[in-house]
Image 1 (cartoon, rainbow, N blue to C red):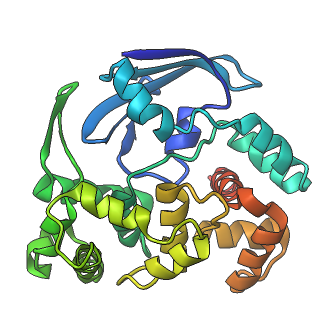
Image 2: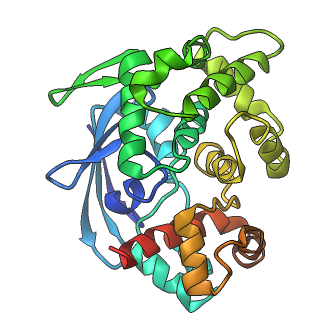
Length: 300
């Protein structure tokens, strides 16, 4: 187990229940168990300074080397969210209130391939069903990641595996029309790897990450060329899988909050995107997460 004291701006509910990830589940003790980097872990946080969201972070089933190599970056622990919140809160009273709702949010640095497929599955779907589909996909086609706390876990399936499947083979996952998107996207990503079909997920991830993503617009253009990837899904991949924090995904919840609190026509997504770019700038994606969490709390 790895323990870190005096971690600030951190809340497990805010992080794992704000629509950015789908393989983390809340335990009865308030901690979250999930899987990343092919390994199941449990993350808990004991707050001892409520106002600053400061407390003790515990990650079970990893060691210090794994923390430094993977988990510190995954949880975005080196970023000063206190300063980001200060900057965003000064934008307007609406954002200041949204930050109070989800003050412990951090943007996870997730696996780009898993993020790509997960958000294709998310289209016209609700979070419980998305999670169920992803778990079924992993159980059927992913490699075993062993047992942890009495449960069996499976890694996210590699792209070559998905590329070889048929829609009939994916039918038990109950993906509907998304099954075709996943197969075609897996084939396209594989074909884009130096003109040859890769045999390892790491190669495919490098392909995605080495595409022209230094310029977010170019990365967006590539992602929207993939089957089943529209504006919302592309921006989710850029934000949650590529750490492009200016990306502002617009889903039904964001349309609702931008209409209800900012007065923008709920159908005018271009206006919303332009407003977010002008108003929130390089922190647009982080602002989106505060707003997403806030509107869901308001409508509970």
